[in-house]
Amino acid sequence: MSTDHSPDPLLLTKAETLVEALPYMQRYAGETFVVKYGGHAMGDPEAARDFAEDIVLLKAVGINPVVVHGGGPQIGKMLKTLGVESSFVDGLRVTDAETARVAEMVLCGSINKEIVSWIAQAGGRAVGLSGKDGRMVVAEKVRRTQRDPDSNIEKAVDLGFVGEPADIDRRVIDTISKAGMIPVVAPIAIGEDGHTYNVNADTMAGAIAIALGAARLFLLTDVAGVLDKEKKLIRDLTPRQITALREDGTIQGGMIPKLETCVHAVEGGVDAAVILDGRVPHAMLIEAFTRRGAGTLIGMG
Image (cartoon, rainbow, N blue to C red; front, side):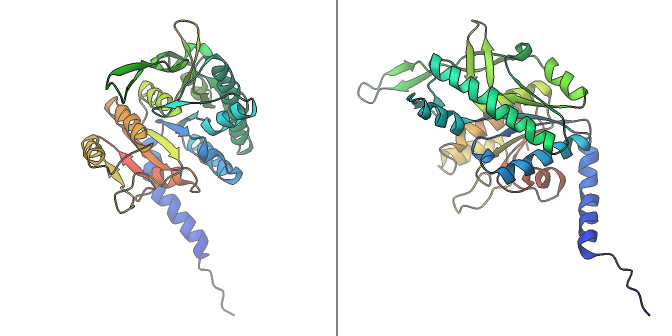
């Protein structure tokens, strides 16, 4: 009687995947990954579970993940429920005192704690906080101008309580990470004037990545990455290439501020930034631990 002792092909494939991932795990052990988790990428419960498992796995192999989350769609839904009108300038929500209060409630409350719960269910330990905690992020008011179409004169636009990071104290994040836990940060900050400011989550993630000297900044969104004019994924970009693609119209719309964040991050010392589709199962692990990658990587070249 013959006995087949050959390994199960599926198990062999899994083992080979682990071997392929090994040099990347060794390379990034002890490094920090800052992950911006977007409002649209949060919509699917199954994708949320995959995301939480990825974050817990990163921590388990010695990487320090820091999650910065958005919540624009959820804020918009709550404002609509409350009958509060919203308007936008250059993609930023004009934020009066009432809108700021609702944004803080949604971001620091339901969304932040939901992500903490997902990570707990995946076997990790996370701590939810905002930029206000420990004065971690001090913001300054965002200033914007718009050109009047009739007079062609630039006019200042008051966005209300919309801020951008002016100073970041990394000690709170360092303390949480060194304790074996995962920081989950809502993009709400305190101003020198004592007011609460709503900060764009991409901008917050980029600023935190610079402050932490992160090895990677991941922007999880609802597109595959940066696409060329034939709608094919561009896997690698430098700041100079991004400028050229923007000038010829390949890059436009909401991708522009994301790429501006990535360029600012890599010019500020982050090793590389990646834009990838948060709806694809385990896209972050594919990007970090395989040769092929999963999104568009922005580096200095």
